Image 1: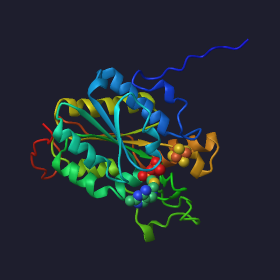
Image 2 (image 1 turned 180 degrees about the horizontal axis):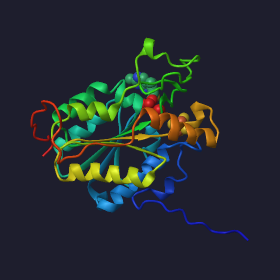
Image 3 (image 1 turned 90 degrees about the vertical axis):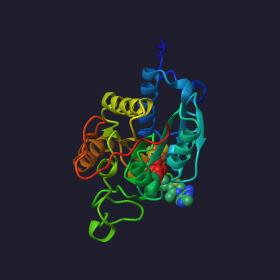
Length: 262
Ligand SMILES: Cc1ncc(C[n+]2csc(CCOP(=O)(O)OP(=O)(O)O)c2C)c(N)n1
Ligand code: SF4
């Protein structure tokens, strides 16, 4: 006898575009589920705009029942910031991979953090350029083998992996929310994203959440090895937790900068 299983999908997901287009075992779907649950919990579906980058994140272009914009590679955040400035009552979400955030879009991330733009940025860190076939990314771990580092990443030659939340936390003015979660803990990841959306709703400042994610297709890993890489190797280098909350005073000489977009 067949057993009917009703999938538990966020209300804001578009059911007719599921099953989605990501590879089996991909972390993008888990991050997008956490985002969907956070939007449901805050009841902001009617006023949320979703923006996705080039890279595997673009496969989310039809994921939600939300007005969605798909941008040039690395340019998602400035496009969403522009929408926010034109329509401050909207809630804007900028969704991208680590290549889009920390390589081709790095200048936009730094500028938005410095300006304290009212945007919620979600970065899916899978340690590779996934859509183009698994080349080294800014987040590739030291010693990690990729298509362009077949003997393992030499950090002495190519630099150490970028720590995105730590970077944003170091330069964002008071009011920022910054965290790193993981697909290995979807409840915590959803809470981080929900706090990031709430930060924008309250007009406090930029919100930046990195999610440690999986790419078994380019890592060439089975299920067990995929989870071990996320939970052990990635988590050892990229610590999980909150790096800035809006009520705390950042260390150093960060000036008060009013959030933009109101
Ligand atoms: C201006 C520009 N440069 C390069 C590319 C080629 N390109 C497409 S996707 C991609 C890498 C995407 O990697 P990442 O942002 O980490 O996302 P992922 O696919 O891993 O989710 C690159 C380099 C492009 N589309 N546009
Ligand atoms: S290539 Fe990797 S990141 Fe892209 S959909 Fe497949 S598993 Fe996900």
